[in-house]
Amino acid sequence: MAASIVKNARIFVDGYSLACAFNSVGINKEAEELDSTAMCTTGDRTFIAGLKSGTLDLNGYFEYDGSTLDKIENILATAFDAQAQLITSISLGTIKVGGSGFICRGAQTEHSVESPLGQLVMTTAKIRAEDNVHQSVWLYDGSSAGDTDATGATVDNSVATSKGGILH
Image (tube, rainbow, N blue to C red; front, side):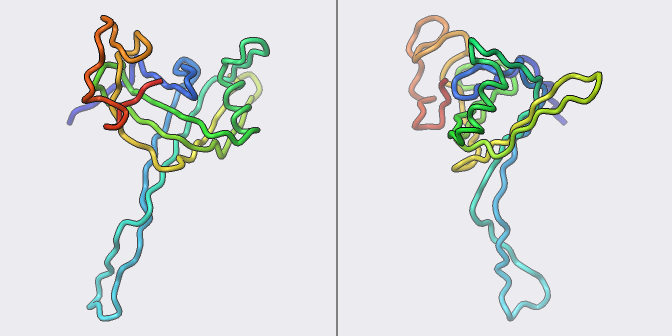
């Protein structure tokens, strides 16, 4: 069995890099189970997959900054209050051109802050994807921005956004 350890993960929420603020992420994809059993069945039910949906469950360390507005609580609380659509991209390892990632656009449907006595203050959010959580590939290696890789060379169009590529 191949096993993976999450190291150097990257999480972007509306373009803000928040990987150092999160300590857990859940990526959930599902399809409705539609019962297609006919009346003439001899005893076994049949099912077909229906509409797909997905959620991201994000858990992390509470941090707020009233001047820079780029901390986890600024972004999550503001988005929840405005019911804004968030674009979220996730890499569970080092970003590299052609590497695997996840992306979704959706509304934040839950937001909470918990502060047990003597413990770290934590914040959580659930983002319900508007059109599912998609497996994608990265357009760049994480060390540069725009449409070039770290050497300045143009990124190969095989990882274009029209083919599922992610770029923030």
